[in-house]
Image (cartoon, rainbow, N blue to C red; front, top):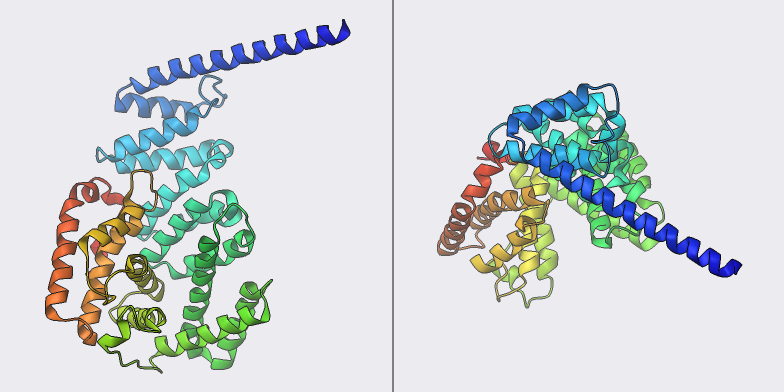
Length: 389
């Protein structure tokens, strides 16, 4: 009898929990339908009043409503040209309800990073980065798009600090694909390289001491062969970026069937970074431009000649960043401009014909026009393009 009674109790408890779950879902739907039916100004007024209240409204601060309400309202109003009001709302949320804000901070703070980076407001940008620095492992996807934004806008020191903090915290994470960890490590190394190049003016010995100190962060847990490979690659890159090595390229160096083609692409990429830096870009931005441009050829892997442009394959490449659920759209928009820079560089190097350059430029123009509506709708995220000439 005791066993039967215990089973009956468990069944009753399960049914009660199910009734409570369904009731919570019903209340949530009703609440959301009421909120969603409000006019834009009324939504802002409501959210303002929630933030002004000293008490915790049980009808609001449950079931993910804060995230849905603030996030959806932000995007709805931004698309109607009301960005400033949305930023003020996020700032107020961050200040008045910090515990609730921090629960989903990556989804909120990346918006502030984009906004303040574009406005060159460094102190406010650094405040928007604070939680990412304190807790980089919370959401790696949003960490990476924040790093992309910092690079695209040329915030070199902030990129260095955030990547240097994030790498040791994420490098052994099982929730992040190895390619992403490798990319983060490469970013950390490049930051160390530009820091080294920029500090050699204060003395070679001091610059090398600081570089060795930084490298210990990267070398931790690696085998001797990996350390040697990184050190050799680092020295090659430094010489290229300093202009101590000038590579003479031929068209034949980039025939896909030829041994060394893909290694040549990497080295050419570093030549391109130096070229873009000489055009006035920060080292960190030049490297980001290289990354999204060269990434196209690494993904394409078709045709006998590596640099032959294909509109279809470039659209497929952009689709990786501009898909419906992707949050990496700034990479896609950057790639459109970056590839144009890269093809001009190839022509100046004499490894691309005028006809091939014209074909690539025409294809990029067509895709740009096809994306014009989206670019204008989300222009607040792509202000860096206005700075790139």
